[in-house]
Image (cartoon, rainbow, N blue to C red; front, top):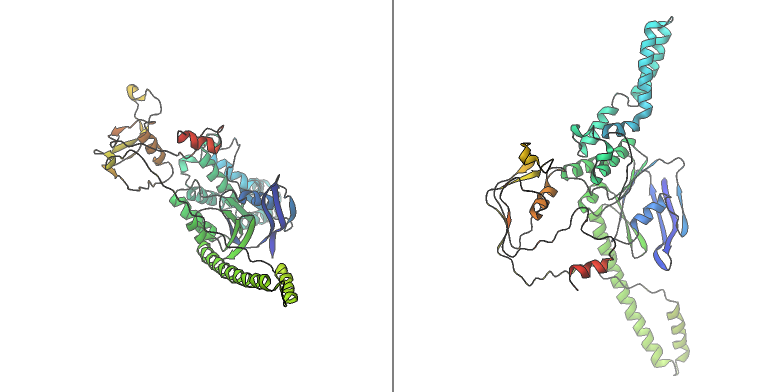
Length: 425
C-alpha cells in the first residue's frame, strides 16, 4: 500500500528544467534512497514530496493522517530547552499520564471509596505501561547515547550547541517521535563512526518507512532496499541496496548501448537504401521506408560515465618529510588567552607519540566527535596554540585547507571568481 506518491512531477526555474515527468511511490515499510549527482534537484524533489514546495506540474498524494518526520540538510532548532528537556517534549502525553498517576496515588489514601480509587489507578497505570511510560526515559538515554551525546551534555542548552550537535539533537528527537515516514536529507554528515554504526543498526530494525538522501555508499548498502536515481531530469527506480543499484545500472546502460548501436546500424542501412533508390525504379519502396524510418522511436545514446579527471601540479617540490613531530603533540585549548599566566590548566583533548607524514602519503584522522580532530588541524595551521610537544612542516610545504564550515569562502564571490582568485588568474 502506497503512503506517498508523486504523479507526473516537474519543476522549472524560468527556462531551466530541473526535472519533469517524475512518477514515484513509497509503500508502507519501504526504505528508499534518493541518489544522484549534486545539483540535480534531490532536495527540491524531497520538499515537493513533503508538500513544502509546489511543483510546476504534477501532484503529490499521501495516506490520510500520515505522520512524517523530516530532517533537512541544514536544520535549525530555536529552543530554550536543554538537550534532555528537548527530548522530553516528545513524551508530553506520557508525562501528563505520569503526573495523573501520582495524583491518583495520593487520592487512594484519602478516598472514601478506596476500592474504586484503586481501580482508577490500576486502569491508568495499565494504559501508562502499554504506552511505554516506564521505558521512555531509557529510550531517550539510548538514542542520545547512540548519537554521541554524553550524559554530561544532557544539561547543555540547545542554544549553545554547534551546528553539528543541533543536527544530531534534531535527529534524536525525530527517532524518538517514531513517525510513520522518516525523511532524512544527508543525516550522516555530523556523525562519527560509532554514531554512524548505531544509526545504521537502528534504521535497519525500523518498521516504519524511510526516505533518505545520502552519498554514503556503505550507509546505503546497510539500510535501504530501494534506490531512486535522479539524473538529467529523470528518475529511475532500482530494487535492492546501493551495490545492487550500481550493478543494475551498469547492466541497463550496457543493454541501452547495444540497442542504440544496433538501431544506428539499421538506420544507416535504411538511409543508404533510400539514397540509392529514391529516384529509381524502387522509388515507391524507398519512400515507404523513409516514412517508416520517420516514425521509428529512437533509442537514446547512452551517456558517458562521469569521471573526475584532476591533475594537481606544483612548481615547487616539497621535502620527503611533510609533517614531523619528534616528541609527539599535546592538543587542546585554553579557556582564556591569559590562562597560562594565571596558572589555570589548559583543556587537553589528546596526546600523541611521534608523528611523521611523508610526501605522497594519504592519511585519515579518525576519532569520536569532540576528541580534537578539528583542533589538531587548526593547531597545524597555527590558528590554535600547541599545548605541548613539537609539530612542524617539512621543507617547502604549502597547505591547502577546506574547513568543515567553509568559512574561508567569501559568500559574495561566485564560484568562478573564487577559483580564479585562488589560482591568481
